[in-house]
Length: 236
Image 1 (tube, rainbow, N blue to C red):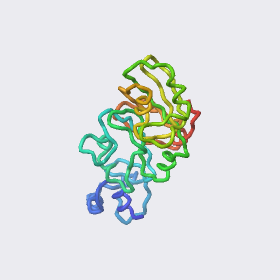
Image 2 (spheres, rainbow, N blue to C red):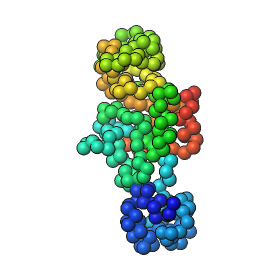
Image 3 (cartoon, one colour):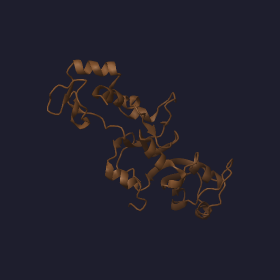
Image 4 (spheres, rainbow, N blue to C red):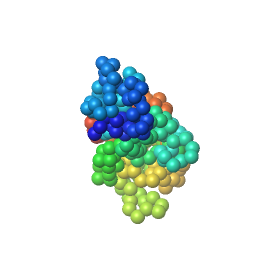
């Protein structure tokens, strides 16, 4: 792939925009030498205004999604892509959320431009655990853990029962729930099925990957070690 096309695909602008950057001498190598549009592609050596390029295709990000943001690019309100550099919306292949968190749910959200990786994470057969912290409107009645673990709970409008889910009681109105599937509004619908209402919902972990110390609205790119941790269910 030509250098100019590679940079355009990373969202820095159209090919015409990137050609202008070359003409302005703003694209250099790490040593500060000016590069040209037909120079060989060496991603790690390229600088724009002295800054390294964004990660190449195969990108995986983790984001601490705040309440009030949606994962849809078509929403007219605040969307998670507003929390990233504007050019990340222009990348090709496109950066997509790995599953979704609804507007009123906060916590760990993954985004990637790698279709195979996205499928590996969300495919039903992966059964990758997802851990949520739920704050409830009413006191837990005591049998929710057995109901959720039974593998027989049927949600309204569904034709197959839920997979067994784990419940850890943290307080009279708070609990940690571990799912191995991802149906529409599943946590909220599960608690509704046992006569309760979720007031606040936060995703803490996917697989062995915790949200960690990221503050709401912050994000970071995941390296190979973090990606491996994602698929380690036994990680602390």
